Amino acid sequence: MTPPSALVAKVPLARLTPRLVFDAWRGITWYQIKVTFLLGCAVQLVLMGSGISMGLGIRGVPLFWAVKEIWAFVMLLAIVVADRITAKDPDRRAPYAIAVVVGAIFAVVLPVPLVRWTLPSLGVPAGPVSPFSLFYPFFEVVIFSGAVVSVMLDRRRVDRARARMQAAELERIDAERRSIESDLQALQARVEPKFLFNTLAHVQELYDRDPARGEQMLDDLIAYLRAAMPRIRDASSTVGQELELARAYLDIVKMRLGDELRYAIEAPPDLVDARLPPMTLLPLVDHAIGGPAPEVGSRTLEIVAESAAGARLQVMIRDSDNAFAPETAVDGIDALRERLEALYGDKANIRLARDAAGATEAVVAIPLERELGKS
Image 1 (cartoon, rainbow, N blue to C red):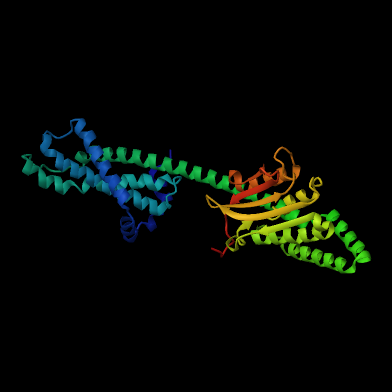
Image 2: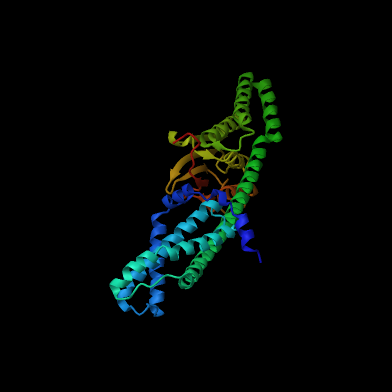
């Protein structure tokens, strides 16, 4: 067992100055005052139930109620001072143990003048006060205050452990999100070789047959690369940037397919700065273009961004044919769904649907977030 002298040595008593006590007293909150007042009342009720009233009966209740409140508030000040010394560290129990002992001494001594002044008015002579007469109330205060402090420190320890667990969980989630963003970044940086080689081959072919169209297709390819390359290392993107990338991609494809492809892109001005993970739209657009040939001989794509109820962003890609048929399992869409769920949890989803006209659509829904500095 650690001797009391060792406990005292571990406490920075040099910091225990009148200024510290005064600052601690000023730092007491109304919540602490209410709790302390009720605790003093509770102690008085317990003692009344035990029949400890020095034979004064109901007349002694106000006096002993006042004494118990003095006890409670003196102990409150002692514990608040210990909080200041330890910075509310529940593992540093020695300052609290000393605060309970020192506070208990002051708590039983301070009410003595009040008791000696009041007892004669209640018909009880005020005899001399001996140190032995203060032993019982001293241990009474120590036991009650020690129990309260022990419960308080245990609760703080549990709260701190819970906070550490929550911080560790948040750190794990943040690390997982950074990993997913890194995967998206790598995906964005990987310009599909097949797409590039095919496009360059078409550029060469068009230059042989129609130099003007070949030059236009090369310009479209340059526009696509300009849209894609500056953000290769970005971990985030916006609706406007992703729509720009999709538009540049579709311009290239349209040069190859001609009238077999029509497309339209819509987004309200207040949504262009909304955050959208990179490479969210292009895999869906590429899936629609690279899917089965349309049954009607031509394909129409519509890309529409809009805000939805519950502070959500929705981007719909509508295909005039079967590219997004709900009954079709598509690995690329499933992979995109998994990435969005990893970033946003159950707040993100991709819905595939078919309308009455036979067209199909993929709807991406995520929380609506603005870029920093935007409103």
